[in-house]
Length: 77
Image (cartoon, rainbow, N blue to C red; front, side, top):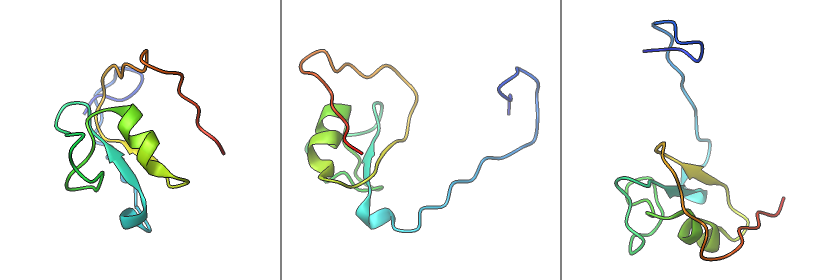
């Protein structure tokens, strides 16, 4: 694994979801906007994930460029 500074490292980043069932997942590579936004069936687009979130956390599972040019993207705290 290559670290943020470009140096090869064996560090592993682990994120623990305390309540993954309450989160919405987006995967720009493997998602599908017809899915349910779960960890097993993430949405494809950030717009669909935000629209479905309704106060829940949104996790982006893959790197990439997410196009939100179709409408302004507002994320409330």
